[in-house]
Image (tube, rainbow, N blue to C red; front, side):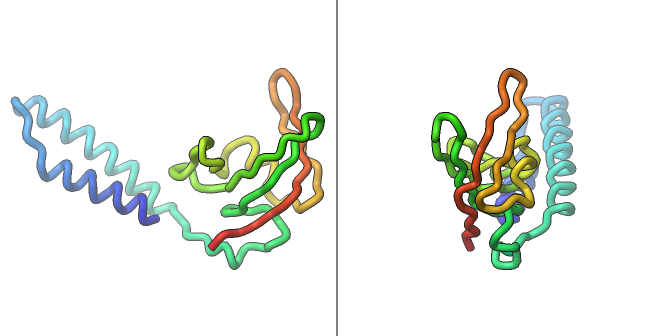
Length: 133
């Protein structure tokens, strides 16, 4: 939520300091900023803060860090299920609306899950579930 509010403040500051060569450029920039602010305000209005301590510790839910073992290769990876704005696969953070996260939600340690893919399905075993505060 703090990240969303900081982004909103940045846009407001950008709007307040607009100075363009022409009125037309200023109008276009202002319309663009107002559109971004509108979308951001909608995201803020729908945002919900989730306390990891209130999540069922033995089930995968929003905020969980999940360690998976890929069947076949034995590759082990850890992902954290986060909001759309926080998702960054290079940091192991996947959006709760991603296909993998949707497959994992409500599963438990030891469960086998299958991620349906175009060419070949990927089978995972859930090794560990953790919630960070």
